[in-house]
Length: 117
Image (tube, rainbow, N blue to C red; front, side, top):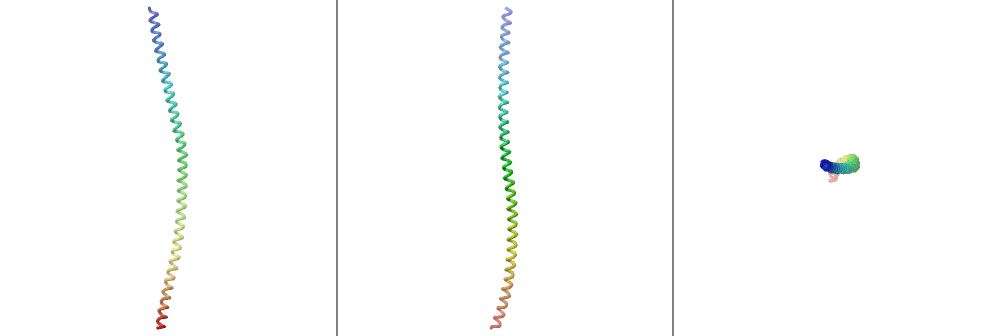
C-alpha cells in the first residue's frame, strides 16, 4: 500500500511541478511580450522625436529667415522714410522760396499799378 500512495503523491508533485513550470513559462512569455511592446513603443517615440527634431529645425530656419527679412524690410523702410523726409524738406524750401518770390512780384505789381494810375 505504501508505494501506491508514494506514487500518487509523486504524481501529484509532478503535476504540480508541470503546472508551475507552465505557469512560469507563460509569465515569462507575457513579460517578454510586454518588453517587446515597450521596446516598440520606445522605438516609435524615438522616431517621432527624430521627426519632431527635423520639424523644429525647419521651423527655426523659417523663423530666422522671417526675422532677417523683417530686419531688412525695416532698414529699407527707414531708408525710404529718410529719403522721403529729405524730399519733403527740399520741396518745402522750394515752396517757401516761391512764396517769397510771389510776394515780391505782387509788391512790384502793386507799385507798377500805382505808377500807371
